[in-house]
Length: 109
Image (cartoon, rainbow, N blue to C red; front, side, top):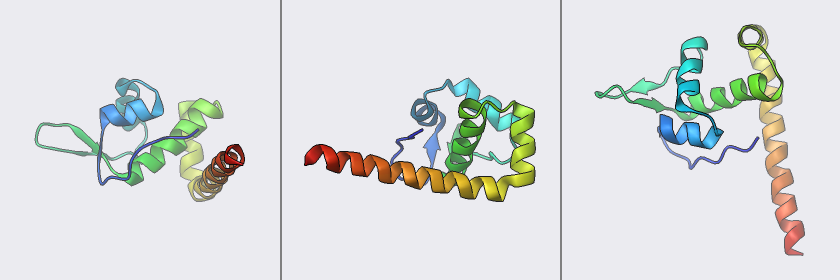
């Protein structure tokens, strides 16, 4: 899964939902279900997701959408094995990025 978001301090829920190709309502639902998601809210109540929130969303998305965990299973997995899961997930993400870069180079040859 490749999430294409520019590097920013905060992201609105619309751009987050678009990047993950899901409805904003799913992002709001996950926010309620997973205590690792703590977007800040401005005076109007609009959510502002930090890069740390995006990292956690990627992990939740990976567990629920790609690996087929139930919400309860994902919550348990995050609580019990978060450090190991995050480390593995970061390694996979970096390897996918390297693979994409190598494929671009290959097409240019």
